[in-house]
Length: 480
Image (cartoon, rainbow, N blue to C red; front, side, top):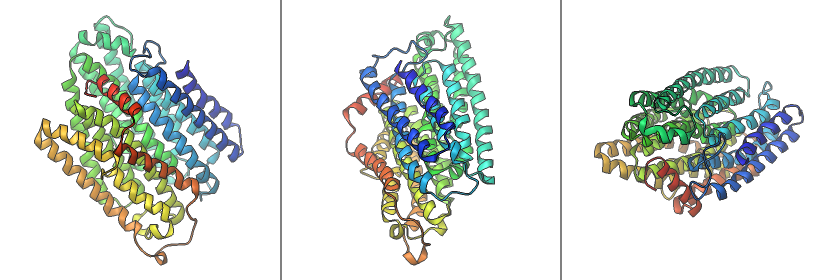
């Protein structure tokens, strides 16, 4: 009943919001729905943990990996909702912007992402991932510029091709399951039938799912929609796209991966995850070195970090736990970066880093937090990503020394690429900058909250989260 409530609540409130013209009332509905969604999500922790307490037999049910990603989505959406209030009410928007459709699409987006996390049926999961595309495309086109239209169409076309491949992978997995006398596409039935599935059908299904959902996840070379979409979408939308949507697509891959692990074919799947993961880190790093649009820079950082998560799960062992924890850290850190990018954009009116100087002087809170978030997402101690990247690196080094060396070298290149663009933005004198708005409390409090959480996760992982991540890692064939 609770999973159904989590899906229905934002969908219904979004429908109500569609008929309301007043922006303040729309934002009140957005915030109320976000708070309610987060409170109900917290209640799920008592029923899903310890692992196995909630059955996956129903079409709408939840296991530990789903709970982890649902919790990230719910928390991040609540924080983004708070940031949206000053963004919509006091932000400087183009005259052709369409704020009236903003809140309904956001809430439908939340409903679709929730459905991805709480369904045990792979066909429903596929439909939910497709629904996230349809709900979020209008958000990318919020400013109704030519570039925004191009980004929205690119997002729709590329992700639709990817989701079509994922559907074909679902059909292939159904064929493999039917050969094992299990016609159902629910996770319990698939996991039970996995040892008896025909290997060619199962392996082909995983390849198609990896390519299909990997397109939505932003794995290179399937990532091309992501920089355009992030550079054109409003900052709170970019935060949700990077911090939540990419995780939802990854969960789709993990469902197929779980079946491969149960079938005893984990090594095949792990090799593919490592190859695409390393490719994503490398391509992300290359583009980050040359990128001077700071919002596109953060988008390429998402490509890199999704590669890190894929490598962690692909390596198995303790790196699986590290990969899952890195997904949490990346969501929070990247959300903070996009919130701060929105503050800078509102002040300077451009995403061209070469035209932004003196942020520490003109926006002291934003500048300080931007430096903090950069260090966090770059893997500097004592922030959370340092711990997770170290765990993955140690496993990679013990598996293959060359792989470990390549992994750490690419991470270093990516960090230097980001620092080379962001640190000059922070420096400079007030005379180099235009006059404009100052830091607003909610515009600063939300990225501050995210940065503090990333710092805390680097110092100590709370017991409840560590227990859930260990259970998730074990469900994926790794070590907790």
